[in-house]
Length: 348
Ligand code: PHE
Image (cartoon, rainbow, N blue to C red; front, side, top):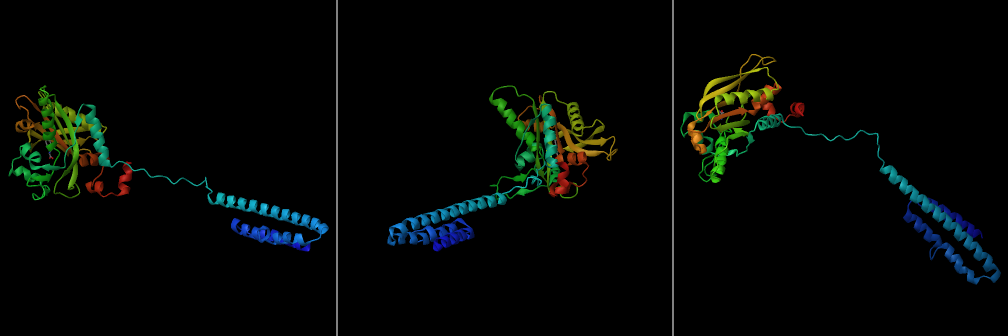
């Protein structure tokens, strides 16, 4: 009997000391297992007298039940402990502030680009896109700018080594004007195939352009938007109307003046620079050069595949950086390309 009580006490103590299910099962084996202490006592039963057998048998059973109850309760304890530690380990502090996801914003040049597409799109201009690596023919020759013509040096550019281009003179386009020729020829071709009358050409072509130039107001890579409207009766007056309306909408102001100043481009005749002056604000009273423009030269109309006796119209080319700088009051063009978030964040 003494033995039994002692076994129950020790079993309960060992179970209580087991800190995880594996050690609890080991402790159980020590008492209830095949070669456990209680099992060993049971084996002795056979050698006892019948009356002793009965009462000793009962005591062993009681002891066994007590051990099982202790075991069971320790198992539950351990499970509960495990659950609690999992819950506290995975606890969320719902009062912590969120880990905000930062959103990117559009680059100011992209904003200008989008605005221009919206404004010209709303008055029926198509939007075209073309290659930045251009042939010498589209960039210069087709635009009435023959080889060795001094006007070419106004636009010094980056040339692709002829060895790499298979002998074809290739360059990074110096302006978006080659898109006039690309778009017009494609357009004319489409309607020639269908034997239909060629409808007006009315397009803008925004994109990247390149020149060997770098200072506060020039970057070797910059953006232009080309505009072209050709029909049978498009005049300088249409250019003026469209462009002034564009500027008013772009700058959200009627408080501006526009001036057409005579200029020269090989691909327009007559040619003009379009200047802008604000009637108020920090830039008040200064004429700012915005855009080259003009009536498309008859030779260029011919290169479009059209008859200059019948087709006439205008083209313009404006710098996106310039428009953006004026709209936001930015004085150094290099800020656009530095990737400085302190600058860029102001636009998002
Ligand atoms: N391509 C000219 C430039 O980059 C601008 C221009 C475009 C002038 C269309 C006339 C007509 O300077």
